[in-house]
Length: 339
View 1 (cartoon, rainbow, N blue to C red):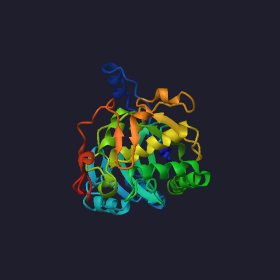
View 2 (spheres, rainbow, N blue to C red):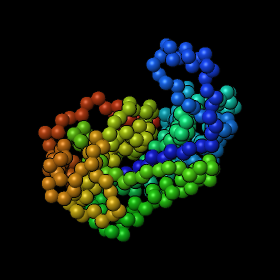
View 3 (tube, rainbow, N blue to C red):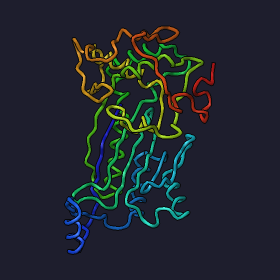
View 4 (cartoon, helix red, strand yellow):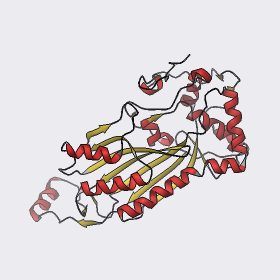
């Protein structure tokens, strides 16, 4: 629900131009212009270790995945905690990274108060002149606003709407990720010697037909499912679901939270900080009178009752659930293990 894009321009030096003969051959046999390139000063492993320091002190401590030039160096497929620095040390010890790399890609996560953040970071040692060497996609979701053990669907709805309408509670609930992100940016600037360029936003996504159709499978009380790491990252998504929380984690209840909050925002009852309302394609949505006309699923298609959620037959059933959605055997009680 909190998202940020960061770029960091590291100290670098321009690479020498191609030799004249090579340039002529490229001109003869290709139609591409060869742009100027620059390389980070120092070696890639040194910058990797500085990135470790910045991320660790900024709260992103757990490694989810790491690749170098498309070679998989680490993948967490069981949801266990692995410290970023320790993983890098282990990779180097077995000979990885010491030979250098063109691009290091790492996915990290961390928690602060009742929020969980995930980030995809790309560090490149050679870029086009003027381009940033580091880019980062960051997102945070609330753990405190998840369905709690023992809650019925109606009790959960009432708890979330009460929070949404209470100015002090709503503002306090959304303050933690701002602190989390500010802390991360501060350590990036200190450890890497360059302040990140950034854009940040608070987003509530109005679920589409596929997401609403999955409401039928949600369990409550004794059938409550936990959020889990995905054994394998899902295929590339577009629009509002193109973000690291979606690729590497699965929370079966997050879209339900978004559905409840979106109605509060449209009805003018939301008392928290400014929030951007978008559809699942990422397009902005209006609020106020007539706003529901642009929802792909009408609000009255979902009835949140005392015992279950009823979804109108006009919303199609969902088929082809991925591994995490069908049930992850590495997570006790997930995927219908409790009755």
